Length: 273
Image: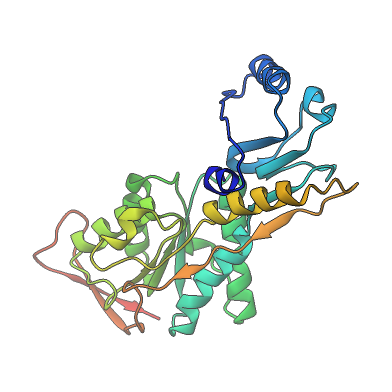
């Protein structure tokens, strides 16, 4: 957003309210007093917000970045997480996978809820029955991805692919698969989400979805340039493109798994389907 605004000759000032209502009001007052021509209200996590009255009373354009308000009074943009989850899962289905596990983030967060909805929508579209045993609940961390993958590999009927709902959990997933002596993607296909820089440095490089941060910032700058003050603004959702790399292949029909914590020794053979 800063780059796009600066290209138009505007300066961007950023401040954090740290979820402090009093500080938020002070910051808004300060920006207005200094002659701000517009205000962008943004959140770290995608969520619905209740805007403070001090913001609603402003006579300058107010835009919402990575959040939205029920009133639709202000232009707002967020990632299209449901479509992103659906696209990631569909990619696995299109490569022949029918039994696909997923590791979610913290499920109270909208991003985790929506990515899971997208996963379920892709299964339903392909007439693949939903299996609750294949949904593991994580917390976005590599450790969560590691432990969840261990649980997946302990299932009687092991899936052929895992959709990790962020790249950090995919890192843990990779480690658990390697611990079990499995090859990615020959033995197990893996898809991540977020397209963090490390995704392209993993071995094999991780297929993942891009969070459209740059595109959302560009969208905000374009709205400011148009200077539209419509009465209502439907929520804008920007696509999370899939970046296809090397972590997905056609499924294999049998799988040899080492016991947890042991990459050598007597393997356990379980059926994949």
